[in-house]
Image 1 (tube, rainbow, N blue to C red):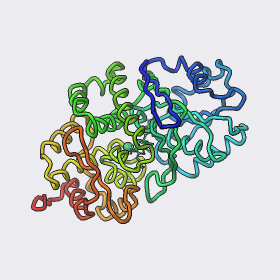
Image 2 (image 1 turned 30 degrees about the vertical axis):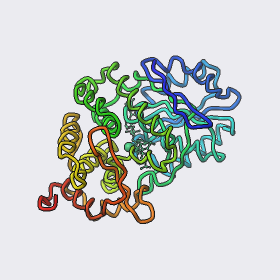
Image 3 (image 1 turned 90 degrees about the horizontal axis):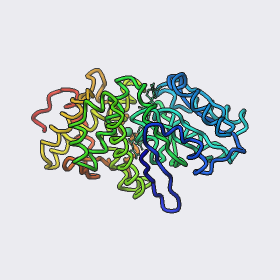
Image 4 (image 1 turned 90 degrees about the vertical axis):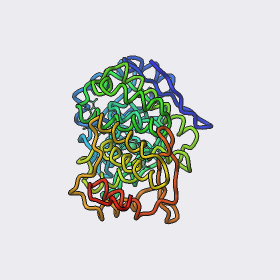
Length: 369
Ligand SMILES: NC(=O)c1ccc[n+]([C@@H]2O[C@H](COP(=O)([O-])OP(=O)(O)OC[C@H]3O[C@@H](n4cnc5c(N)ncnc54)[C@H](O)[C@@H]3O)[C@@H](O)[C@H]2O)c1
Ligand SMILES: O=C(O)C(=O)C[C@@H](O)[C@H](O)[C@H](O)COP(=O)(O)O
Ligand SMILES: [Zn+2]
């Protein structure tokens, strides 16, 4: 088992990563001082529940915790105010109090939804992340929790840090291939923004990761969580540095909203967005090689690199206007300077991004770029 710590000044929390981590759940919950006198609520989704819920509930009850659970429908559309209300109803019926904790057993959807429930129930109770997707190495760390609005992604939310993250690699072994690829998109992102050597490792180990080799997965998720933990420790509330974790998301979130939540998976949408950012980098004098390496990497992982042509450009641009990185009317955009290093630019114009969107749709704007 590998351990990382997210340092947030007055407080910190551990991330445990490895095969069989769940076996230590009682000791790790005790280390986090979670109460046995107040009920816990485990939130999961309809695809994870039949696979992993029974074992988690048994381990918690064997450890003397009074745990109950609720199950939301699998998929992005559960990141909604309606499902939030359902979790709060279950929490009230189960008698949760301010010493209780919510346990998110699932991917990023469950983590964001349950985390926002924990952030808002009784104005905030503690919560634990037990990620079950590769993508959730990103979503379980850093405290961004939210639900979607039909017009915009993650637009109703909070910063609410977990007490601990238990990342048991064995839970990932039931993931379907499309979800494996989508999750690896954020792994690749962490290399592109921070670590060129890790990016090269991802290029060299694609087959091992795509085949869920536990050792390769453990290493990749450890590095991914480490990059996230370093960035969040330096800028918890995205005043500046943390924006780099949003590489590819300006276009990516707009694509998710326009395509319909769940049609285009988050990892697929940001893959396209990161290829777009790499192409846009040439506008600012950076090497064409960045785009070639970025596009080649996502293609090697079977991830999309172009926008589905049926998605309307005006609708994409309209959705993009809700991007939370917009400040004082200025678009904030993450641009790669080289593999492993990005910059936060405030001089990217909406028109430049529109041209990239059209390029990503395969429409010819060759004379522009
Ligand atoms: N808060 C953050 O910092 C952050 C970071 C990245 C992504 N996100 C959010 O995370 C969401 C995407 O997360 P995701 O890709 O994990 O999606 P997800 O939670 O919907 O999980 C993907 C699918 O796989 C199923 N599943 C989950 N674990 C499984 C397992 N072990 N075996 C088999 N099936 C399993 C789920 O039921 C679901 O159908 C998006 O909403 C995105 O905005 C948030
Ligand atoms: O943690 C962050 O900061 C990120 O940007 C991580 C992203 O991968 C993640 O998708 C996040 O939810 C996007 O943040 P948002 O503020 O654009 O909703
Ligand atoms: Zn993301």
